[in-house]
Amino acid sequence: GYFEVWARATDENGLSQPMVVPGWNPKGYLNNACHRIAVQVAEEVS
Image: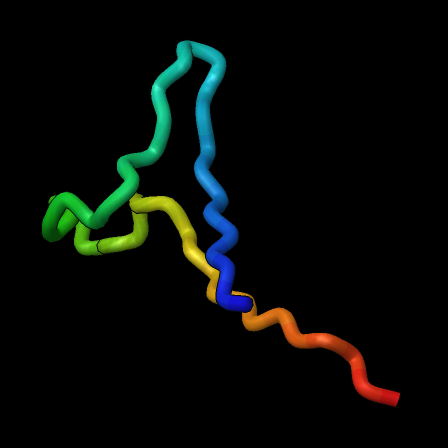
């Protein structure tokens, strides 16, 4: 099946990265949202 793994950073104050890209970062990094990795899992055939 198809699954998604999400990685989200949280600091010591409980502030977390946004789940979606909120728009252009003022410093131009555009890399503040959670990271998502798609995974396809299949049965092993021997």
